Image (cartoon, rainbow over all chains, first blue to last red):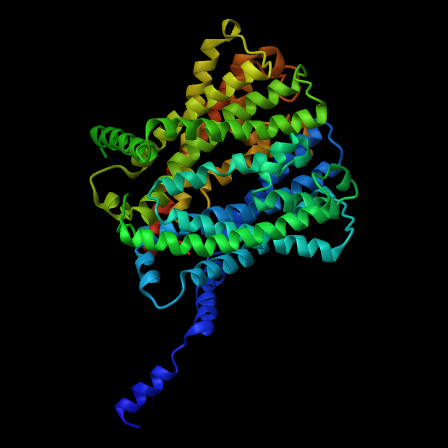
Length: 285
Length: 284
């Protein structure tokens, strides 16, 4: 085989189209999952410490004499905070970090889709975070003797899948917005922790709020996702639920479509804008 | 290490920390940023409390929780301020290696970086307390406050938190950049043991000794006693201790944590140099 033949053969083997898309997803998800396993300190910082914070809220409820199902609400809410933190810090503000580290320009120069890179981040982040969330639920349930009574496993899995799809879709959408931001990206992520824990009802039923406040908070997928999951796994969940589970599923499906389509359009637009304004390699430290 | 080097390191780090924390936006947005986060944190507890008690803000438990939570803002702020500087310099600005070869004292540089968070935390505490008095009938009367006890306790407490922050900063030298702030994660965990938002008696008996070993427990008790004396004394956990005894315990534990911070810094610093961790980047 001549050199030209070898080059031609090599070119014909190039990964393009949907195969490139899938390979990009796997490539970006890889460091999220494998890289983390190489750094064992995450077990302490991402499972044990959040578990203690969850326990603090459990004991607040016990101190004020709350019914025991609220303990379960806190454990499930505490586990779900891991996903919110992951979306906030490892999705939304990730492109800002990539820009600061010089990777963003490489991503854009490479012949792959930015959407695939973000999907890879989402898939990797979701899998790694799911491990932490499961650990928090297991530990919390054992420590505080939380009783579950699952009304429908299929609905529960479906709600979780929808909530995660919409949540990470939202993360992909906001990531594109962060392409234009500098240091404020980091501070905005920092700002979106406690206020979201509050309005999304991570530690109490969202029904406690005024209807319109709860409805506005439903724009964040975890609000309805959490509410529906609590309704499906706790005996008294339905009486403390904000909306009927079927309605919440319908809203979550809508959010999935809105956020994923929005992510695609916004990413294309922001990428063009950022390139035109020269912000891809800008480093406003 | 001479006095001028430590003072210079601290002073310049304070200025640098303030610039890093505040000059990313205009003053108005910065003020909103400083106010919203702590108010939301307090509101979570207020909503939890009001759901269960039906809004019974006259119970002594409410000011206990509210004051503990308000002053706990300092714990997260100071510990994060000091420890985050390590990751910020090492992985974001990539300047930690330059700091190491500069003629400065690294521990005093980190402590200085925490001052801006302390100042921001002070604003957050004041805003949280004001919101409590204005909207939630928090029984805080400025004419009845024991100002001497308050100022002494605040000074010792912040010193103690800075020492804890230094311990955390030293440990941070050895660990990877996780997706959240280690200082806030540790502060969130210590929330459980310090009696910040519930009396220690609520904890299982086998966990209470951890709370009694934490200086934050005594500091928060002193802050509550100095502001609203009778409320803190309504709970039996530390009622047998006088104010002076509590101050003595707090000073003793602060000295212990101060000594620990020196030894832990030396060990972590040595290990980080030996393992080549001073300039690594670990953000996945």
